Length: 222
Image 1 (cartoon, rainbow, N blue to C red):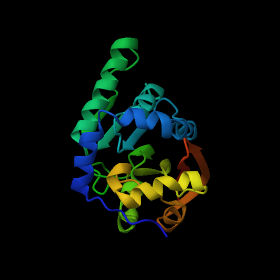
Image 2: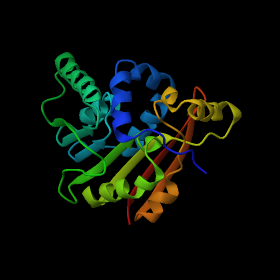
Image 3: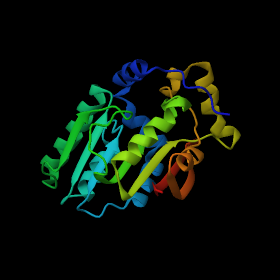
Image 4: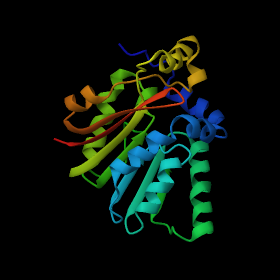
């Protein structure tokens, strides 16, 4: 049984407004290996319509944009402070290398109400968001992901997983004491929800970094 999500949507925005300045440090030590593996599974073709939901500070989004120079890469997030940091990351990348033009777009957006037409995207990517959401909202978010994906599209999800070892489960204990110590994140298991929501799971991987457990999933619409 999963721990209950304990931050409201407005709490999430407030928490990540405060965490925006330090998030990259946390991500480097706990999430970077899983993010890199997710990019490998995503395998952008270079001329695709790509959507990342919950871009955060743009760690994955910048890589997606670089790998998709002839396509269009869009990122949305609930938190303006995180989007601002992502935009600065993309601007710096462009100034340093000249490798990006405005083939990318960042905007405020809600995973449950994506403002895009149906069957638009070849690839939808979502990292470390479901571990913030109540289980009751998993189905509605996955339904939106399926709606905006092309019938032959790919979905890549990375989340905090339920720990398997004593060391990994310490993060759950911190969450139980005070969820804000974990940025509102607790371990989830999404595979069964994907199958119920009309997806076929093609790959499932479990990875631990600094004893922080992550699941990486590649799926397609059924």
